[in-house]
Image 1 (cartoon, protein in one colour):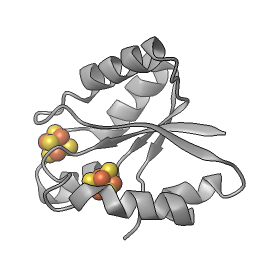
Image 2 (cartoon, helix red, strand yellow):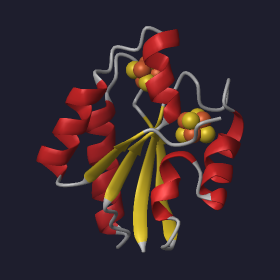
Image 3 (tube, helix red, strand yellow):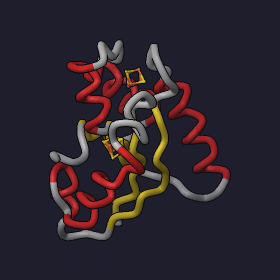
Image 4 (spheres, helix red, strand yellow):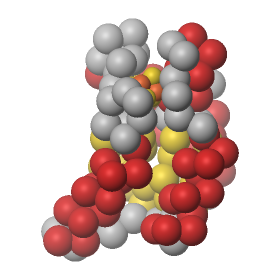
Length: 119
Ligand code: SF4
Ligand code: SF4
């Protein structure tokens, strides 16, 4: 069973990408970056945003991690939402995705997948 957290762009989520329907569809259909889970169960432990500009993703993720531990809802993988990936091109997002990935892997010992749906 894969247990994941999805990180989203605060400026895009529920504004241009409403109610995360796209990610929920892709998870259900095992499409995009969720195809890797096609032979296993998938549980979404949390969906949280990046903490807003200028990209407070690490402190936000630390809070998510603390709460997940407190409630016995540990997770193994963080998906950096397609919204965050697209924000780099469309919203002058200051997040350096490669660096964020590296920090999550090193400091939090979690796997990181860049992207979610491909719609
Ligand atoms: S890419 Fe996914 S996580 Fe980001 S806003 Fe859209 S549906 Fe939500
Ligand atoms: S543009 Fe980047 S830093 Fe700003 S809210 Fe979106 S993902 Fe977060």
